[in-house]
Structures are given as structure tokens and as C-alpha cells.
Length: 316
Ligand code: SAM
Image (cartoon, rainbow, N blue to C red):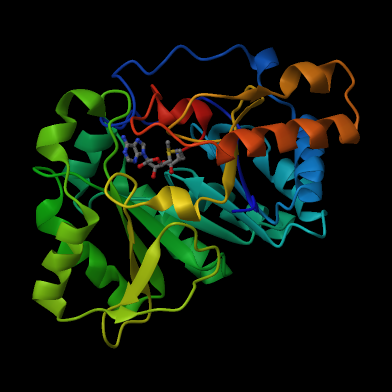
């Protein structure tokens, strides 16, 4: 499988502390000078285009805590061959920044949202305010940052009783609700077994309520998610079976960490440092060679257990 998708973590910092992602005090932030500058990220993306990348997603940490993110968006939007430029965010600062991101050339957003209940939201994120996220989602729809996808991590004992309600968001609005299997990273490792609910179980629960879901052809930016529609709905529901599914076969992505490490695979070892070469004056040819090296690592068989401490570090 060729690589066409680059996820770029623009910061390791986050303004929330989701219980399945980070410890209560967060993780020690890396020094500012260790984080790639916008101009360095743009150089990597230019080289990535040479190896086939056409989709770029900005993520983190929380990308909207990085100052002047729209300047990076503008730099990347200038690159003609990037035909899908998106952002994954927790949505807390989205209402404040959506307009300037749109103007800068952002195509669309994914917003993480695990519950529709503000108390539960405050609990799972350790302090987040749900109303602000909704404001951001509404504005993203209004501005046409579409398709707007919502990422729901499914956690038994936390939101399994809300799955129908969450899926129903796709009925009246063009929202695309994606149910993501919990993965045993970081703090979730300790309680993963009790809290895991498979994508198949989620689908069964939805079909029990809505009847059979309809198959949907590819949605813009579709990766390992498969999409379905509740009959009559404007949006879709999707399932990302990171644990139970065989997503490795459809994986077309590389991840660039905030500190410039290129990770070919969430599940395996092997990473390629780009920051060193970038700062030592590597030209585009050298970056292309390093990207190709990471892609080659991707083709080797992944191990089955994730070895990652915190998704926030390398760009979830
Ligand atoms: N801060 C941004 C956000 O909230 O979308 C981007 C980074 S966040 C690490 C990216 C995604 O990873 C979020 O949708 C989050 O729910 C998901 N995530 C984090 N830890 C996870 C875990 N243990 N299992 C499954 N998904 C996880």
C-alpha cells in the first residue's frame, strides 16, 4: 500500500487531560526549541508530496493551542498537490479560530467528542466545557469546513448508553459520527480490558435501534473507517476498528511527531528522525530519501501490541 496521508503533530501540549489519553498532570512538555517550526513542517510536507502524500492532517497534542496555527495552514494550503488539508481537534478553541483557519485554506475538521452530557464531558476530559465544543462544531458547519467528522472513543461503563444518541446526531445534520475502538495506550492500558467495546458490538447496538445501516461509498478523506448511513440521515456513522479490525492493510499513513520524528506505524517500532537532518541543512532530496526509508519500515510486519505511551506525543 502506498503512503498518501501524513499526520502532523504540531504540538505535544494539550489543554485537556482525557482520562484514556493522559495522566492527571499531563506529560512533561518538550522544550519549545525541540518542536518543529512551521517552516520546517512545510519543508517536510513538500518532500512528502514527492513520495505520494496528498492528504495532510494537523493534530497534536491539541493543535489549536499552537500559536498562529493558521499561518501553518496558509503555508500548506499553498502547496497545490495537497488536496485534503484537515485538522483534528478537541474543539475547545474551535469557535475562536475556525474563521481564520478557513480563510487560511483549511478544508475540514474532525472534532473529538465522547459524550453529549456536559457533566460526563467535564469528567472524561478532566475539566472541559462541552458548550464550547458545540459552538465550534456549529461554526465549522456554518463555514463549510466539511465534512465535519466527530470522533467518539467508545468506553464501556462511560458512554455505551449514549451510542444511539450520538449516532442520531447524523440524522438532522450533515455530521459524520465515527466510533473508535479504545486502544491500550497510556493510562487506558490499566483498564482497557473492562472498558473495551468492539466496533462490531457498537454496530449491533445501533442496528438493533435503527435497523440495518446502509453502506456508504467513500467519504472525503476516508481512511480505515468504514461508513454507513442510518436510513434517511443527512450524515453518516463510521467505525474505526483499531484493535479488532485488520486496519494495517488499509493503512496509508505516516505520522510526524511534534519533535520531528517520523513514525511509520502506531503498532511497531522504528522511527526516522527528520529534525536533526532538517536543522543540519538537509535539502529536499535528503528528506525524500528519509521519507522513503520510513515507508519501507512500514511495509515490514507490525507487531500486534501498541508500544506507545501517549498518543498526544506523536499525533493521534
Ligand atoms: N487533541 C486533538 C483531539 O482531541 O482530537 C488531537 C489529538 S488526540 C490524541 C487524537 C485522537 O486520539 C482523539 O480523537 C482521541 O480521542 C484519540 N485517543 C487518544 N487516546 C486514545 C486511546 N487510548 N484509544 C483510542 N483513541 C484515543
